[in-house]
Length: 130
Image (cartoon, rainbow, N blue to C red):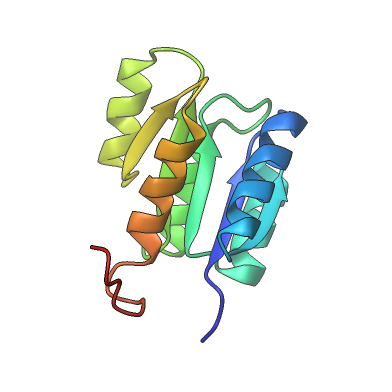
């Protein structure tokens, strides 16, 4: 079975590295982008299953990137990350099709569980411990 692909879009290198490590160890193929241009190139060439998208990115902001992703491929799941309580932006992101958002600093386990929940639905071996 093909690995699910996760794209991490954040202008902060530390956050990208942390999330790449977490999701690689979960068995996903991970990609990273520091800006919208690179993110959209990866979306076009790799068609990730899920994008973790920071709201505040210099140049093209998260909402703009989200619009482009959803226009090109509405199937891609997007989870927003935000540093502030930007409720109006979060509301708009949800209207544009983002599934949920995490406020930084986020709990890495919560995010891991959320991503696994989105990507492993009905596509894993039965878990006897559930």
